[in-house]
Each structure stands twice: as structure tokens, then as C-alpha cells.
Image 1 (spheres, rainbow, N blue to C red):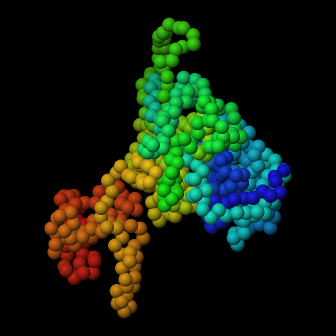
Image 2: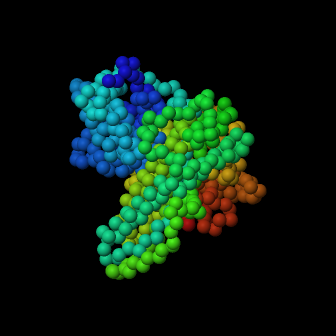
Image 3: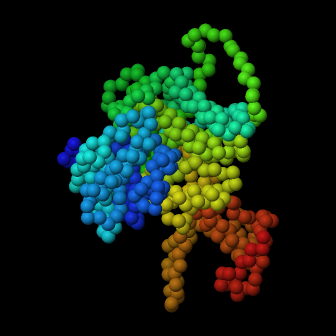
Length: 530
């Protein structure tokens, strides 16, 4: 039974939930939030047929497993439709969410499928959304939830209580695989991946945890966790948080994420994923540890029975997780970081397997927090031919569809990825990258010209203002077209359509031919020749 006073808390806006055509959306929550708290929705984009309510659960689970940070999970489903039978439609939503959760759960999340699940129904013709919750592990019994609360400050709700944990792990897998037997080659690749996963849980594995904040007066010294201290058996939602007022002892379980977060933040600081407290976890393997059983080194020779090829698979795992600041570091590593690394290994394996004996894909993980989404996501891109290659364009298009992002602007290109090369302290965020000293958006604040019948046109997005004599270069009287070009290219850069530098006057790749002065006055006298 669910409590009579159960409440659905919506961190995402009601508009984000209902602004879609008929279909199915997954409701995203977190084990660190109160029950029935919805942070975002992911649209179901894989179907077994033309029916919008028949998900391909395998493809959906593979996508969401790679996309969703550990620390967030699917807590229900929403069906947008025209219906008179709300309860029956809610049962369908709950059943679909339960099926997906079974595929998403792994050995570290055993028992998660027994938790109550939300089934929501949105009316296509109105803004009405009705919420129900299961009273068992399926839709055999459901109850209506009439209390719905919209959080006024969702960013504060998420980032004052939580932080990000990041782990980067470069991997080199040397393999000797049979050339004429692809199935056997894939089996060998699978075994190599399983060996890497086993090492992550090895008692000799060592995890070094340190703060990404550079204010040494507040951040704790790096902490070392050994594989023997980790706990993979407890369910994440059952873990008791260690609050600051709890009695402290020497146990490693009392060291929490908050010990690596800034204590005194500026009140004026914008609360968001981009400047959230971030913790770095590094994976080490203690090979110098004394063996429990004395043994002599052994060398074995395995002759190749068939034609073989030696390959080295080289890729880097880059995992980002969300955790409550009061979560013990032991559980942060064993229940978030390690499962996240394992998930990404399987994602990489799926992408590499078809090309094991050919050119290996160049796989890179990026973390994004596009506008309208309250939490980051992780995307693995294949960049053999660059991100403008048609295949990558289609990948980003499907991501925009799933996340409800507009198609008329680049939000998931590499240049939009979260930048973790930021130096943070309690009062200011400084970028290691050199910033621009140019004026931006100079049209803002300019009063009306007063021209009768004039039409006001405004640019969308930011640009750098380039003008005569800038940077000490004398182009007075002739450089107007070139300065216009620089301003235009700066707009493309700042909107992340391109990463090329704004050309200077000495850049010989650009040649301009300036037409007659009356064309220049009309703003169309710029002809790009090369």
C-alpha cells in the first residue's frame, strides 16, 4: 500500500511533460530524492511496431543505460493520449515502466523492481495530468495520487543536496584474435571485457578520491578506498546517509562526499550542473600487494591453430554520476562509479564488436546539460570521420527527439559538452581557457532610432563585436566587410556551430572582394571567394 498522503513532486515543468504528441515517456527520478519525485522525462523512441505504445525494451534499455547518469533511474512512465479510462491507461504505463526497469537493473540494483512505480496519464486536449502509483511490483493494484507539487527552485533542490562524481579510466586491451572466425574473435573480446570488469571489483583495486575544487583550505585531502572495503550487496535506495551531525569514528563509511565539497559558497553563485561540486575518482591496481599464497611465476605458450591477428583496443571510459553529499564514499564508488564504468564498458563493446577485425571506431564520451534539462547526460560519440558525418548527425537528431530539444540549434555537439577543466573555489569560477576581451551583444540597450516605418530585427544568441582599429590593426576606411565577417563567425562560434577560430587580417585562407559602396551600405557587399 502507498501512503494516503503520498505526493508527486515535479522538478521539471508541467509544460515539459505535456508538450508532445501522443506517445510514451519515461519518468526519471533518483534514489536520493523523496519517493515519487520526477526530475525529467525521456521520450520512448524505439518501438516494436508502428504503435507508439509498444516499446522495444531492449533498445530502450541500452540507450537509457548509456545516457542516464548513475544516481538517476526510471521511476515510472507517462502516456500522452486521448482516453476516458484513466486507470487502465495508468496500468499500461506502470507495466511498461516495470518491464524497462527489469532490463535496466543489474546485480548492484537487485530488488529495485519491487519499488512502487508511477503511472501517469496526460490528456492530449488539455493540460490535465493524472498520477497513479503501483501498490505492488506490477500494476495488479494501483492507487490515485491527488497531491502534486511543482518545485519552485528545482536547480537548488538538486544541487544543494547533491554533487557530481567523475571517473576517467583509459583502457588498452591487447588481443590475438582469429581472422577467419569472427564469432570466436567476439567471444575473446567479451572475455577480455569481463576480465577488466573483474579487476574493478578485485580486492587489490584501489580508488583514490579527491576534490576537483582547488581551495585547499576547505577540501579534504585525497582519500584511498581499497577493494576490500567496497560493498556491492546493499540496495542503493536502502543506504542510510551519513549526516554531518552524526557521530564520527574512524570507519571509512563515515567519510562522505560532502567532505570533498565546498562548505562556504557565494550566495550569488548560480546553482547548476556546470558549477556543481565535483569529485574525481581515479582507479589504481595495487600490484605490489603481497600474494596470499606463495607461487612461482609461470609462462604458458598457446599456439595459434588458425590465422590470427594481434590488435590493441584503445579507448577511455569517462563516467559521471550524481550522488547525495551525505552518501558514504564507499557506496559512492561501489554503487555508482563501478556500475557506471561497467555500463560504459558494455556500451563500448557493442560499438566495437562489429569492427573488431577492421578499423576500430574512435569512441569518446561527453557529458552534456542542455537547456531545459535539469541534470547532465552522457553520450558516447563515434568520431572516426568527425561529428559532421551524416551518421553522427542522425545520432544527435535522435537524442534531440528523446530529450525534447529543438532541432534548430546545436545543443549536443562536442563544443557544448560540460567543461571540467574549471578551477573552482568558494568565491569565483575561473576558466583555464583564455576568455574573450571583446564587447558582446552591443545591440542590447540601444534606444530606438525613431525612423518612421522601421522594422526592428534582433539576433538570437551572442556575438563578439569586431570593429575598426581593433587589436591595433589600422583598417580604417576599408576593413568594414572583414570586421562584419569576423562578427558573423563569432556568432557561429558562440552558438557552437563551429570551433574554427575567427580569422585575422593575416589569415590567407580568406580573400574578400568588396563590391560597390552602395551594396556595402545595404550590408550585402561581402563576397567570399575562398
